[in-house]
Image (cartoon, rainbow, N blue to C red):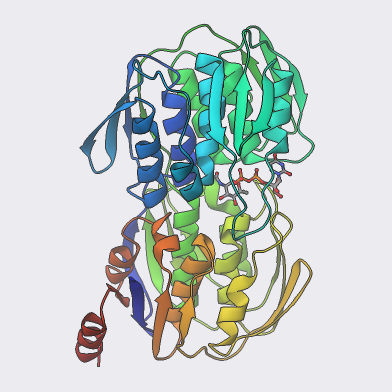
Length: 430
Ligand code: UD1
């Protein structure tokens, strides 16, 4: 089983290049099956979730040609089977985007119901409500969601909760429905906008993505396109907090600074300097960080996917911080692990009260989920001594070349698979 071994204590210094946004890419790849023409997608992140989705797409007849590590050609003219295997859904929840895409294009989708996940219960009732409003019959049988209709028509849909997944899924189906659709109380995340831009580049007519009302005029056919995915704001934010927690100086390159505003605001509040450039941000932390309060919210609020990263940073900031998680109920598991490094935190319902300690000390820990895993890496880098992380497969789901990028900033971190590799790391790193 692969592990990370980290020798903490080095400030991260240098430049790092951010990859394409995983969550945008998941929606865009699924949307690409809505045309029979060939689609070229660039700036695709090379991470496990994306590679599994590409396999799921191949399994239903999509021709996938990887031109480079980050560029892929897709052709879906031969997609005949609209039934996706459970094996893929088990690995990535977001393959539920295939429902919206298949329903829009083929008026029929048969996709296994995604199960729960480590960060909390994740219902898809809003996705189903949207498909039904567009005229689909949706039933759940033998663990599958079956969505089908002879005729998909425009509709007026109000989402009770702001949901990224439901917004994207309904938008995809509506793009090829007959007539006009209005979706209200939409998610405004940058990846919702990116999927809308991608669909528009294929000939869809979607207006308002990035606001809370999206208006769609359905079209009969979508056509070929070439499209480059936006940078990953969560990967960028993770490196920004890694710089802060290790008292480093990092230029985070190939980002859209506007997408990072909530993260930047919190870094400034805790005492970092943040300099913005056209497509980069520099984070410098030269003194002990200060406590703050933070509450996760839909975009443009502070992202839930950045909650563990700020949490570990506040664990070494001066004073007491209050972190409120308002999106997912089970996102504080990393604090149990962090306690083993000497952190002082108490969780009461959806709130964590974190009192910063002078320093954390390295420990062996298990990664509970993707973002918590990245946060524990940050904790290990900032801590004194050696940290070993188990279950790093979660991190590999969403971070491309994570340990290599960190090593480029001076971190002492390696992925090891055997006791021998572990010993070699210890010899090399004293
Ligand atoms: C997406 C992101 C995930 C991020 C989350 C919130 C992807 C692949 N994943 O997940 O990384 O943490 O947005 O920014 O883009 N809800 C319902 N009913 C539904 C759908 C959602 O009640 O049908 C609730 C959820 O339980 C949650 C809230 O809505 O409390 C937001 O979830 P949602 O935005 O849908 O998250 P995902 O799209 O699953």
